[in-house]
Amino acid sequence: MAYHPEQLCLDSFDFELYTDGGSAGTSDFGGSGANVIGRSRGIWRSVVSATTFSGAYRAEFQALLDGLHAIVVLLGLKESEKSLRHLEDGRLKVFWLSDNEALVMNVRGEGARRTEGPMWAAFEWYCRYFDVHAYFMGRNQNALQASSDRLATSTRIAIKEHHIMLEHAGALIDPANQAGRSL
Image (cartoon, rainbow, N blue to C red; front, top):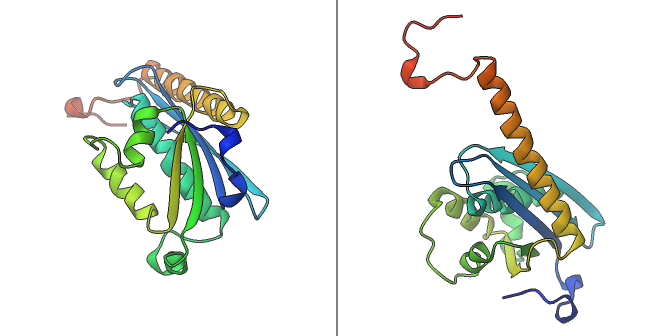
């Protein structure tokens, strides 16, 4: 479902989550960015993460998980059953906006979840405490979504440059070829 700002009252949500994940291909580096806003508490947080060998779907999914984790942190809770138990009866409503239509559809239960099994398990765990309402909007049509895009892109570039620097320094080692290596 596409997001139409004029048709939705964001005041009915406890948190807003804007994410983006970027990659130049499935064998490239991925960057994830998320902006979280707590509606009733006047709190916000931006988070980033990076990984190697990631596609855009996986990077966007990581941004979603990072954003849900940030909500737990903003609430001053820990990711434990005991700490979050009181949320099970009244799950917090999270408005989530993404430019990855396939992931939005999968989160909404539309289409098969064929990949990223561990990430889906983590998402389902968060769904015990959060009622995630997924919306799709084309790239950078919202200021907070554009900010998430910049976070993801900058992080992807930074991890790629860092990896190249380590390769040139000889710090990256092929695990299959470590015999006899010493410091």
